[in-house]
Amino acid sequence: MSNLDWAVLIITLVVIVVYGIYKSRGEQNIHGYLLGNQSLPWYHVCLSVMATQASAITFLSAPGLAYSSGMSFVQFYFGLPLAMIVLCITFVPIFHRLKVYTAYEYLEQRFDLNTRALTAFLFLVQRGLSTGITIYAPSIILSTILNINTTYTTLFIGSLVVFYTVYGGTKAVSYTQVLQMSIIFCGLFAAGAMVVHLLPSDVGFVKAISIAGKMGRTNAIDLTFDPNNRYTLWTGLLGGFFLQLSYFGTDQSQVGRYLSGSSVSQSRLGLLMNGLVKIPMQFLILLIGVLVFTFYQYNKPPVFFNSFELNKLEKSQYNPELDQLKADYSQVHEEKEAAVDKMNTALDQDSETLIDQGRTALQEADRKEKAIRKQVTDLMVKNDKDANTDDNNYIFLSFVTQYLPQGLIGLLIAIIFLASMGSTASALNSLASTTVIDIYKRLVKKDGTDYQYLQASRIATVFWGVICIVMALYASKIGNLLEAVNILGSYIYGTILGVFLVAFYVKQVNGRAVFIAAILTEIVVIVLGWNAVVAYLWLNVIGCLLVVIFSLVIQRIAENRSR
Amino acid sequence: MEEQKDRPEGLGQELPPFVKTWRQFYRLLIGWLVFLILMFYAFTQYFR
Image 1: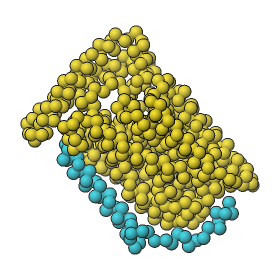
Image 2 (image 1 turned 90 degrees about the horizontal axis):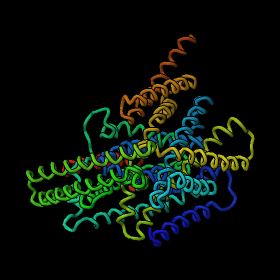
Image 3 (image 1 turned 180 degrees about the vertical axis):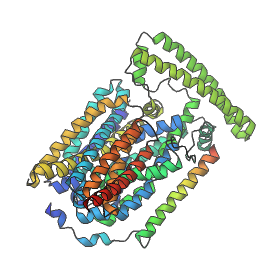
Image 4 (image 1 turned 90 degrees about the vertical axis):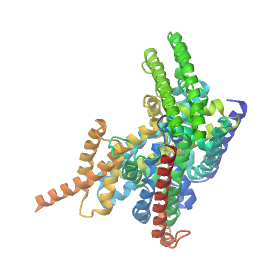
């Protein structure tokens, strides 16, 4: 990185952190620290829930996914607008009316303490683990730039976020997220424009997408019914709906965001605007990945995008074999460039025969490239059995650092930092609020003062920060980070959502029945997920439905016995 | 904690912008989702 990039990066981070601390200045109480005194307008709620969901992983993994397998991931978000509507009709008014701090408080009022404690515990496990992954993602950036192990970068970034969050509190988190999202939108637009600008002069925006489309990268909609296909219209609408409803309705990191709205209407409006904007935003992020894919048809991509792992191999005894593979790779890329030129001409002439020939040649070159990359990763494992052989998360990053102009590199890296800071801050804040409100205040110290709970919240934030950093250190062993977070969520969200749906809509079920049903469901979901019986998005649907069915059956059995 | 209980109850009755009822806003959002799916389907077919 140039001095200009470092200046842009440091100034942006300093401004955001100082702004967060400035906004949280003055005497605070527990209500202000955890819910921002419930004083925020709808656009704060909207940008805050977006910033919480759109972590650095979104900006690292999504373009990488589009590059390697196309745009089908956009379907994952199709259930989101529907989930927002259900939330606005049911969850938001109830949470506001009952004046709860956390979603799980409601469950004690409806059921019993056991159910509240179980759902709070499941949330703490899920959010604690996934926040570790959220911290790890941006640490990849510094690792690549400074060419040092991700362990050190994870420790540095994790500590920075914990420091910022402990002092920030909910209000500061929300204020900074508004600023963060504004910068993120500007930066992404600039990145997209730059990719198009860097393409050859005879390849415009539409032709770039056409070329990617001929290689199967513009598959935004998949209508097949294969239950093992992760991203189809149906998994997105149904599985995505249940996942998003669970995430926004029962995950405290989101509930805490919209509970900070100044009224039911402001919370509702913030969520509905999120429903309007989220899918187009995700589509544009994936489109950037598709454009980067086309760019690399004309410019030779690295044989492996993770330069840290590649450098390790270059310094090993396997370097001569690597050199040979690099030479083969260069030759294959020359073949590929020739095939892309043919495809370009075929598209100009609009000739189906020539397009088919070009597609076949491109796919053949692509197959050869993949085969060489596989040999490289095999060498990496031979050299170091713990080597990270998945470079999906490095694709966009590699492009940014190698091809974008000075200043913009710093801005885009700052964006990834900001996104991570926003979502991690929300997560740590929610972990602290659940620990203090649902565990400490309810089970350990019922008659504490406001100041004691405020201090407990700060200590809980530090505690979870440390746990998340430790988890982040293990995240490098997991393949695609974005999918890892979603898979983890699917193991737990369905069950928690089922408990909430029973609470809202099935009045005859009591606490004991729903508690047993939730435990049985969680066992079934883990078995199904572990054995990969269905695509992971379906686990949300299955988990939710099983809780409802089990709780009804158990309630009926209990009633029959008591008669 | 007391501060939270002092919030005025009437604040939840505000109407949404652009439309007359919340129900209309929900319909607008569903319409937007259908429009996006159709656009993405056309995008997939056109560039395939």
